[in-house]
Image (cartoon, rainbow, N blue to C red; front, side, top):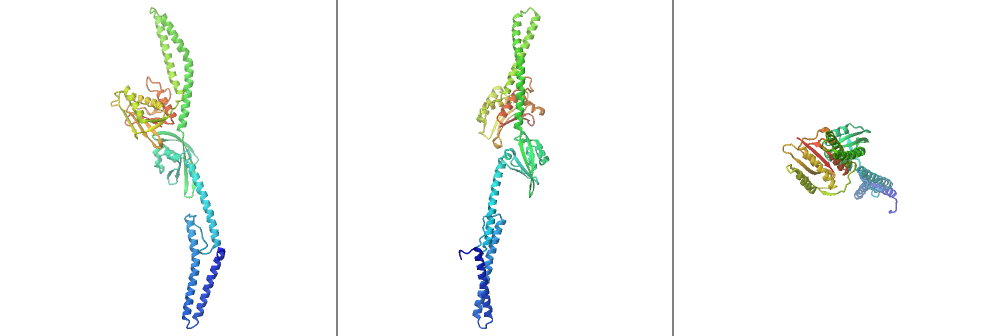
Length: 443
């Protein structure tokens, strides 16, 4: 029997049990018709009941096995197998076990594909966000979690990065692309939005791709400014070099000829000396701007912010002993990867501007603060309670040649922005309530 196929064993077992049941039933019928055979009738009745129960249990075991197998399938449990030994359904067992094996392999292949796709989406450099029909928002990859606030759960929460950003996302249709501006760490950042729609059984799902382009725009703008400055300085120096040389020589010659007795010669001497001074002033101006055509060369290392701020505070107090400089660092022990010399030069320029901004202000205050941001970034703020920068000028002040000071050159903030961009950071200007200005360097 052990070598007999399962299907045959089931048939033999079923026929045997039916035969026993029929035999016991026939014996019971015969004993009932014979008077006085009470013990035989009782025994035949017991045998008939036992045969009937055995036949019922024989079928029921298979029913239970099938039911358990189907229930496992309904719960996506593909680890179960169907055994035909209990009920004897060998052919059915082979078919079901073959089907479950195929389902198990297909499920494993689908899970592998899903893990691969999930890893692929998670490592996509562009932030991806899903928005369902109910307005629920999910950050799909690491880039999105680095860029956006982690608490975003619904479309209204997108306003945490600016109402304009939320409005642009809500108005964007599948297949469209749109430029926008979102606030990241308090810094306006230009980005390009694109939308796609995925149809699912539970409803349509919109996939939003966010491509930050602020760094590319800054680099392009900086390159254009550098080219412009290079051309202008080259042409001006070519034109002014002979003027400077000749005017200086002429000033020396006329100074030698001026004996003080001829007013006309004295006037000519004053005029030519003025021309010589102005020509040298123009050359100095051009030489100053030539540094903007040379990108800063970085020598990065880990910089202890507390030590850097202590040095800046000593320098500041030596130049402005009566002007308080408030310093704050959060958390203590903060360090950043930067070029310490260039970073100090940038912050010195900002501190000088802040000191000039509070000149004549009652109870002037200048602040230097560093704060750790998410994703390992650091914000360094230089703020003051001065007159402030008009909103219309907050972008222009970073342009070469632009200055609001009578004795300014328009180099300091432009160079500071170059240093920030060379570090892969950003430098912005914003108003402070109730009065004043804050320059934020985000690294």
